[in-house]
Image (tube, rainbow, N blue to C red; front, side):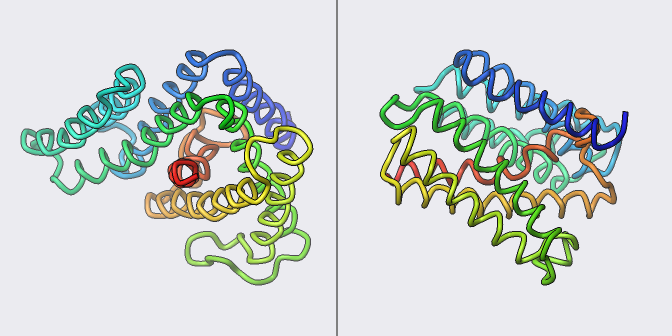
Length: 265
């Protein structure tokens, strides 16, 4: 199978699983996000520790998984659970003989904040009342992220000349980013105005802008982690695409800021 065919097949399967689980029910999407947290936190551990296998990796995976799962299940006491789990790396570092506090704290907190927290907030968006969008808003969010990725790539390939952030990602261009921004905002307007009517058109276009800005920054953050670790992909769980972080990098940083935007609305 060619690389393009592999990317197309497994990319389509990825979209079907994510969107299908959202449409199916809350717990189906919970399961998909739970798997995302487990695999994603494992990839974070490898990037942060620069080790294929480490005694710290299981702790990072367990902490991130608990942070996500317990906060979803025990929704009413979420803040207490979050605070307690955020303190756990201090205890792990205290009893660790092989890893410094800096390595333990950075690895654990990156996994919880960059992977588990966005997945938790997506579950919160899913829980929103139907008049605020709920699961349909979540589908729109994913689609806007993917549209930005696709059109930023296509525009950059066609007319990209000025580097956006050459130190971290040499292929990204200002023209590509602007192309992604315009098409994402336009898509948000058309979908909301002619179909969903979730919120005011200007508010939906504002959300699209938040998605583009912080989604692009999430992509760059993950590129920074890979560059510092000296690897091309965060993993190989999705053939032709790399790891979970490679597919969710934009989502992981965009979602917390979209959630804040929705709370302000």
